[in-house]
Image (cartoon, rainbow, N blue to C red):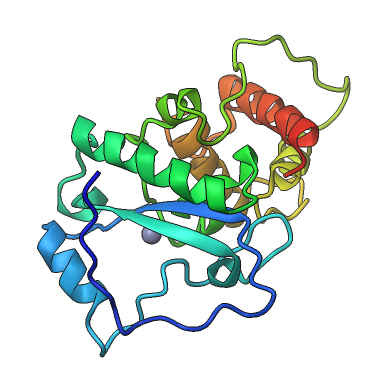
Length: 219
Ligand SMILES: [Zn+2]
């Protein structure tokens, strides 16, 4: 892979001791890659990749993460599949980053995972299972049978499991705005066939299976 360096003035120092334990994938959401590069290098703008976010109790996502921006027009400008060459380069880049930092598979995330109410990227066309096959991120066996605790309210059970996975979820027992946004973010990553924020049976099952994997892999 050929890497071209294009330093940006928009950065800050890592707070000591500078442990990096999250990898966050984005799309640029701009019509062209050149326009996205110009914006990220524009001294008049902030280019920190994560903004306000949350994962597994942490809110300082920029301090503890590496972010990767993938050129893609995004949902606003003509969302499209990520081409093969881009994914091959991404896999190489991720492997190099994962070799340098203690980032567990369950902490390779999309921007929408850490900011469900604000962000949609990298979106439902991003091939998470393929990356997991390449050793990057977590993709549990969603065909595994799962049995929920009998008599537990489905919404409350899903909220508990989503929090266990790492999402910023209140245990309200209701499908409030935040919960619907978190379910949509979960679907974009783990059940991309239908990202409507509804807690259908398949989504509930996927949430339970993913939560089980979270318990096993020390998020
Ligand atoms: Zn983003």
